[in-house]
Length: 291
Image (cartoon, rainbow, N blue to C red):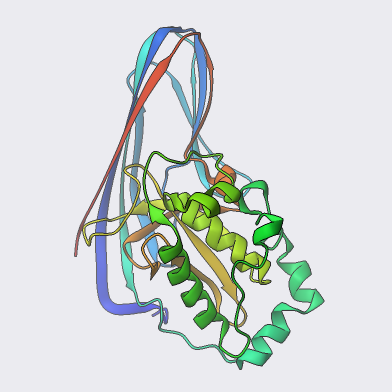
């Protein structure tokens, strides 16, 4: 039994994803890449996966550079609207995210993260990206306390981010930079995650962006489509999930799809459409479970 798991506690999840796309003028050819398939990992096992479209299109499964599953669609016939539907079933172990202890004292943890070997090993998740770069005037926005453990610092950062940003949909977009988020203090789950990641990296903690699904039955904040949270690396412990939009650690309600340096590595949908005029897109995600 993994030390994070609670014995004999597991959940059977069903996820239904729908997307409806309508175009002002016919689309003559289109390519899409969907990254919405839950991964198999130590706490979750995918047992059923189905993906289909409303038009005759070729669907191929592949693995991206981060080793996550993608569904690639190539449609050659003209269409004015198209629907995508996916259904996934998986078993998720219940997790106690606090059920671990570091073998190191706080001073040893901070010594470890400041070592050259550690920085080289985790360089890809320590280097700021355009979406996770703190503006120079906010570089000292939040400082870690070296007298307490890295876990306690990250839990405090999780709460600070939750209190600093007000959850509000429609005021930011996928390309919103941290300067805007920090100044206006409004955003959605991806904005919370980008700010958490930026501050963790600024304090020499490797952090990565996670895309997935959230069961919102317990009153959590989340997008109506995909949810986002962060994972931070703690020496002698490993990667631990933090959801700053809800001020919780990731647990069995969080179903992981992928991770990367920021949103751009984990975008649920990417596409190239050969058409003109406007288009409208509607998404919906339904997450249910049985214990």
